[in-house]
Each structure stands twice: as C-alpha cells, then as structure tokens.
Image (cartoon, rainbow, N blue to C red; front, side):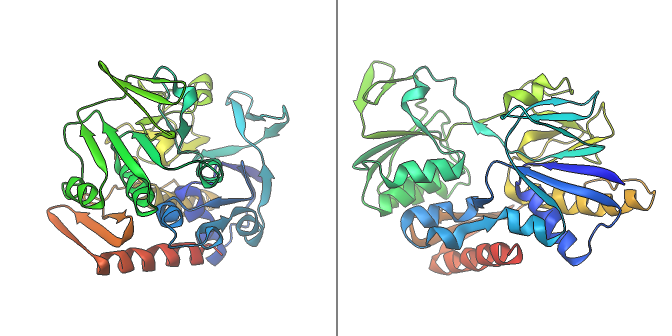
Length: 345
C-alpha cells in the first residue's frame, strides 16, 4: 500500500481531508504533516483581531480532522525534501519516507526590507496573533498594501489603534478597498514602500522617518527556502512549477497546490479561493489514481469572489465587474466562513 504524505494544512489539503470524510481513500496510507495540531482560519483572522470572534471559533483542529479520515497526523515542519530518494526531513532531523507527496505549505511575507527583524510577520497566523495579543497597539504601521494587510489594518483600527498602511503600489485592489480604509480611519500611504525598519521600531521611507509601537510585515508572498532547495523546478521567485494536473513538471510523484505552487500554463492569484478548488481537484485525482486512472486537470475559475472584512461588521464583495458592500456582506461572509470551519470539524 502506497504512502501519501500531505505536507502542510492549507486550503487545498483541508479540502482533500474534507472530501475524504465523505468518501475515504482505502488504497493508501495517508499522513499529514503540519507545524501545529490546530490552526487559525485566515479568513476569520481579521474578525478575531477586531473582536467579532473568539479565537476558538476560528480554529481548525487539523489533527482531529486527519484522524477522522484514518490519516496519521505528524506535528513538525519540513526543512528539506529529497525527491530522488523520496524523503522529507523535519526540523527535528527526523525523516519521513513516502511514495507520493503533496505540498500545500502556503507562502511567507517577503523579508527583504533591511531591518525586517524589527517587525512582526503576519504569518504564521498563530504566532502573529499570540504576539499581537500582548503588544502595545497605540501606533501600528503595516508594510504591504495587499488584501491581507488592509483587512488587518481595519481590524486594528476598529480596536482603537492608529494605523498607517504603506503600499508600494499606486492603487489598491479591489477598487473599493481604498475608500473603505479611509472611512475606517487608516492612514494610507500609496506609492510609498517601506525602505528600512530601524530599532524602535522606526519606519524609513525616503528622507522621512516615523516611530511606531509595532510594525507588521504583510508584504508580497515569498516562497519557503526549502522548496527551491529540493531541486524541483521552480519559478523565478522559488515557487514549485506544476502542470495542469498540479504535478511537479519534473516529478510525477510530487504534487503542489495553493500559494507555494505556480501553474506553468496559466498562473493564478495566490488566494484561498483558488487553493480550495485545487484541493477539490486533487481529491478527485487521488481517487482516480487509486483506480489506476490518470489525475484530473485543474481548471481555474475565470472569476473568483473576493470578500474583505472592514474592521466593523461591514464588508466588501467583488467579483469580475460586480461589487457590493455593507453590513449584509459581512453577514454573508460570516456565514460562509463559519460554514467552512464547521465542515472541517
């Protein structure tokens, strides 16, 4: 019986485990490797920060979910992968053998800003939130104007913090995000990338310096270093290149999905919405391969729904050329988020 190793518990692997709850995969020994037995759902993190949810309401018990599908749960972090010998090495120096492997470890915030060690990274979310709970939050700076940074900015503003958001981009997406940030009282600095962070912490942009109680890193996605070190073909930023079946373009026994992977034929946004669909495709492929059939191709959705929390119980929705906002959008987002977490219980 083949051993299938799932490294990471991102949206794609959670979708696989959820699918296996309904229809188990009896022809493989399954193991899940993740840094923690439980983890926070990223979609509800801004709501936890803002005080709309208790932490436990936004947590997913990965170990229990693995047990529900008769999978072994292994707590640890992969630091090296040897595809030639089919070995994954963990941070504690233990090694795991596998026949097939799927990687869904997400991405990290880029840390190339000089002085990044004086800032707090928003990932992993669990460590971020633990430190945020005890931090002084009078004046907070956020480096990075993506959706995650904007949602966290509005959540902290709702908590009463004075928040400055630095974005190297001249505009934000979706378009309604900038007006929402300004309504929330966030000081948005468009086209102003953080050039350096000094002890204090002090943010340096050009000739300007400003001191804060806390600086958060919500910068562009960066790949885990061990991905490139595996020898698997990666794109120029270090994310694993996969074909339309989400297999490594050089190794048919390696799958990768979500933020840690780049689809060679048609790169898609690094978003949980796309990762979830990839996981559903992978679950179907695993069943196919168990029957001796070929894996299925992943077909990206042309348009994806974006839901952004705006601090208070107010949210934005955007899909294609359609957009909406209001309290009712927050309740819609709340329903979808709670339903996702409940489906994994």
